[in-house]
Length: 285
Ligand code: GLU
Image (tube, rainbow, N blue to C red; front, side, top):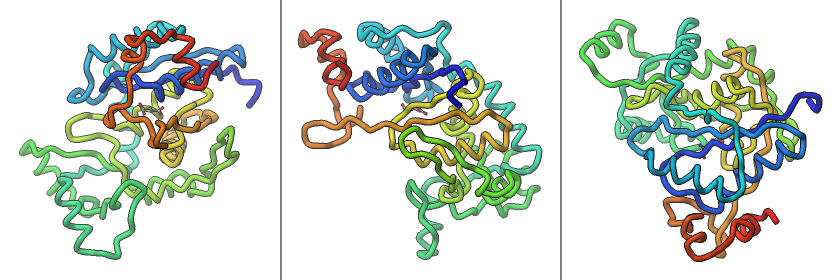
């Protein structure tokens, strides 16, 4: 593992202004690359057209450059990669690992409420599998009438095709080897009704396509890596090393988040802080 040249990336979603937590993640990825004489990439995660804004893309370039970061050009943009995501979905579709799901969020919640013993997933109720049982002809008829659908991964079949969950191990620099348990997530969505890809599919394909060898990101995504490891097995992709780092918190101990109004780098800058001071506040002296 140590012989591989290190390639890291910072992968923000342009849905708001960057805050100190982003500065930490970006500086962390950059340092991990530099320490090993490696390369640092920037990737804009802009598949969600409804929430992403070009103004935030421009702002993040400016903030990162102001902090002293430099990255390779051209920058990877997920919005330019839908053809590759489509190809990835087709490879999963061929052995019958995907199925169209027409359920709305409310229908899923109602269905789960009917069976209180239903297992809970890592992020809310586990999808109960309603559309997995839909006859193919019925699904095709719905699609023909233009009904919107997502594509879900048939988790049980996917794990079986990957040779069993015990085969799916991955390495984290701080926590060591982890045995993946993707079944905990149930039949995850790989293409959304409104976007023909999902976070899990896009990051897995992008990290492989851009040659990333060390994925550094917040520890909130630790469990999600189990899904990415499964996709790597199914799509014959290389398995990078991981380093899930801590998340910065505010004075009250709350994790910094855009929607909770965490102070943007721009506002710290407007207050007169220098790049060195902002780097120090993010924990990088
Ligand atoms: N775009 C994700 C975020 O802003 C990061 C994804 C990743 O690093 O895998 O949280």
